[in-house]
Amino acid sequence: SILLWIKDKKAGVLIQIDANTLNSIEAVFSKDCQYECLIEIESYWLEKIFSHQLNPQIAMLSEKILVEGKATLAVYFFNLCHSVPHT
Picture (cartoon, rainbow, N blue to C red):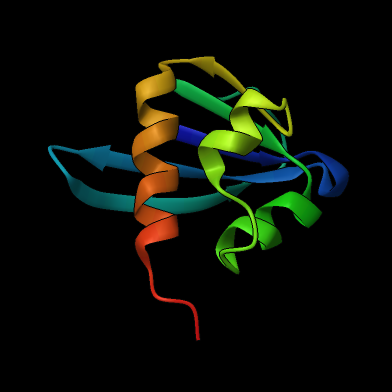
């Protein structure tokens, strides 16, 4: 599971993924939940990634995204997000 925590909103989304299948998404308002990967990001940078103005790997290397736990899950998540065509 991945906890995507939006730092400036003090809220997040818990994403359950098993064997490449999205099982559930639920809003959370505390980091006191179980996760394999914690992704912390400001909403500004998340919007830049979703609009294809910022490469997620560059954002991770420049510490715009902080990752705890299984970093491979964060890379997988952002590769999925960044592969969606921008309209």
